[in-house]
Image (cartoon, rainbow, N blue to C red; front, top):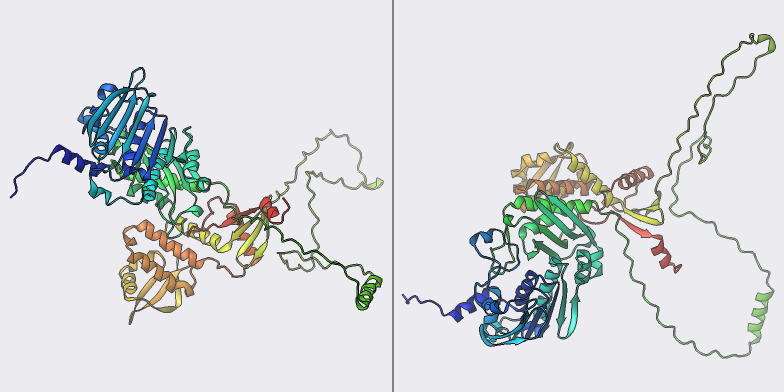
Length: 630
């Protein structure tokens, strides 16, 4: 067996650097975190060649004292911990004392730092060793310049990507810090050009706008939630503005950017039955909790955390986001394509004049001498007019005047003199109180009609609403089924349905007979891989029974039986989708009006369980713009 020896200090530093500094973005993250811990209000990051040849981080924080400057580059040297008890309540971003030592061991560093009221200091290091030290004139704060990263570890250079890729990683690191600390003004300069700049005024939504752009910021709703000793703030995208990946999910715990499967699962659970398959919500969520309730010392790069009470964190995020989505005001607006600028008209050819031929002149004079006929306007047809069948032998009711009026009892006609009783003096009676008749309020909307047997048009104020009747009916059915605490009501088929399934589907359906009964199904083995369907949900059409069972079998094969709540949602979603009015079906006016009334009277019917909008709005301004009226 080889003899055991202690590693050389330089080799140990290189191994430690490999854990902390993977690429230029890792160095930027560590240096920016130190700047934030130093109380900086402004942080500037400048890179060249993706940060490999030149990387500079400047802040206006408290600076490093001259006597501590060289110590700061030693391993496990930190100002943020003193005793082992401090590890249980870490309130700073950096605390290990490894970042500066790791970066310095694989690069060449220039340090300029100054504390308030003291003289500035300049240090130069190479491979972790100080080569120059001198006084310097500089403003309060710290500037660190990192040159030739990994110059002494050629093996690491092989794994570096192109400069553009490394630069994008650096930009991502700065963006996360800017979102985590909206009260700090960040600036990123890439090859002499400013590519990111935040205001640092504490406005998180404004920072999202500056980092991700206008469209994502507009598509977000605010989240504010308090759960026991946890507080959640931030923004999440609307269900109609989801993305094709999770790149726009940003989580922060006590101001620290983290990656957490628990937080991701809680976020996406809040979008259950509101988001299309294969889509993912975007978010910027900041979770604040007691320092003792989270362990940030579980990963060398401090990008992962562990919670003492994971259920509380999950519920705080899930119900906080769900509440924000349910309170989202308004409905999705119709997205119209941007108007294209018309091309410049082509120059007209120059006209030439010639003398008419006799035939042309004769035709011309006949047109002039012909009598002018008054044009008759074609009959105007009201679009989407609802046809109401006439009611025989019934006179139309008079229109109700829009005013408040009262009524009194009509006086009786006077009797004849001989029949009149003797006059008796009576005390004056009080006049009866005038009773105001209630006037029905005009509806806040008007159903115009239906187009393409799919969309119902509704006029409301200065806007036209387009209601997708299938999506609306599907959502209403789903919410109705979900609100029931009992099993799904079933209907017994007079003639059982024989349906063929795959062996896997047949096995899982027969195995989960009691579970299927809770959702209104009853099946039995018919032999040869077929199943006999004897009972289906009352809302379901028999023609949809097989496809509904196929979807339920797919959910069971995916392991949803271990999550009863998710399985119940999936089963009820399938029933609602199959039983809802289909696009292209003709809808009777009474049924159409009832559907519209249910949607307009409720604020929670905004998206179908697939995540598609139930209704979109076309404003008068948008419409007039299409007709060039504005």
